[in-house]
Length: 453
Image (cartoon, rainbow, N blue to C red):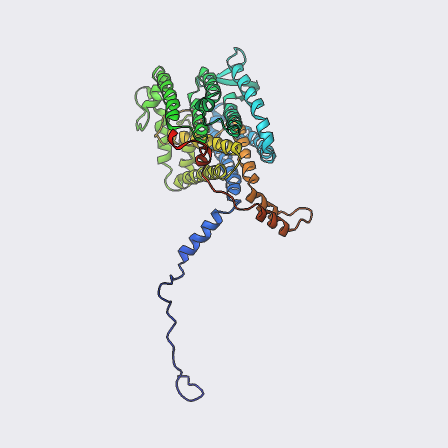
C-alpha cells in the first residue's frame, strides 16, 4: 500500500455527490436537444426540400429502370427505353428546377397569368379531334410527334397554384378577403373551369388533385368554416354523381381492401399490388428481382411503381420513400408558415398540398386503402408530363426557402462573395430584428372578426 511523506496511509476521499435538485447530464436528452437545435436552423427547410426532392427523383429513376424493362421488351422496345425517356425528362426538369429556384418572387407572380392561359389553351386543344389523344380511356393527351406526348392537365396544377396564390395575395393586400364573395370569385369559377376541362377527358384522378389544391388555397386564406363546408359539399356532390354514373369508377371503388381479383378480374391490379408488397418482406427480393412486373401487375412503372419498390426493396425501401415525402411536406409547411409574404405563403402551401395529396392518393391506392385514381407518385413514377411541372414547383419551394431573411443570411455567411466579411453579414442578420413565428391561418385570418367563424 502506498504511503504519504509522513508515513501514514493516504486518506481516500469520497466522490463528490451532485447537489440536490441538479439533474444529471442525460446523453439522450443532450442528443435530443442538439437534434432539436439542428432541426430549427434557418437552412433546415432549404436542405430538406433540395435533398429530399433529389433523392426521390434519383430513386425513382432507379425504380423506373427496374420496373419498366419487362414492359419495354414486351413491346419490342429496348429494355432501357422508358428509363431513357424519364432520364431526359429529369434533365429538363432539373433545368426548370434551377431556373425556378433562381427567379425572384416578382417574376413568379408575373408568370402566373401566362402559365394559366397556356394551360387552358392546351387543355382545350386536347378535345379537338385529330390533336388530342386517348390513353387508357382518358382523352387528356397531345402528341408531340414520335413517341413523345404531353398531358396539359398536369400543368393545370401548377397554373392553379401560381394564379390562385397571386390572386389571393393581391386581395389580401387590399383587405378584401374578409368578404366571402372576394374569396370565392374568381378563384372557384376558374378552378371549376379547369376541373370541367379535365373531366371532359375522363381523368378524375387529376381532378381530385386540383380540388385538393383549391381547398388548400381556401384554407390558407382563412375561409370561414361554413364557406369551406359549402364548397366541399358542392364538390362532393359532383364527385358522387360522376362516380355513380360510371361503372368503371364504381368498380374501382369496390376494389378497396380486395384480396381476390373478383369476377372478370375487375380487381386484378389492386390485388397484385398487394401481392407485390406482401412478397417483399423486410428488405425485399433485391433490385431487379421483382416477379409481379413480369406481366402480372399492370402499370408497374407508373401508377403502381410503389408496389414494385416494396417487392424489390422491402419494407425498408417503402418506409424510406414515405420518410422522404414526409420530410418534403414538413419543409413546405415550414416555408409557408414562416414567411411574411402572402404570395409565398399561398404558393408554398399550394405546392405542398399538391405533392402531399397526390402522394397520399397514389400510395393509398397501392395499399388498397383508397380507390385506384390513376395518378402517378410525384417525382417517382414514370411520366415526363408529371415530372416537369412538379420539378418546377419544387424549384418554387427552394426559391421561397432561400428568400427567408435568416436563410439568406446563413447562405451568405457560408459563401462569402468578393471578400465580403462574415461579420458584416452577421450584423445585417442582426439588424433584421426578431422574426415572428406565426402559423399560416392565424396570420391570414388576423383581419377577420372573432364572431365570423
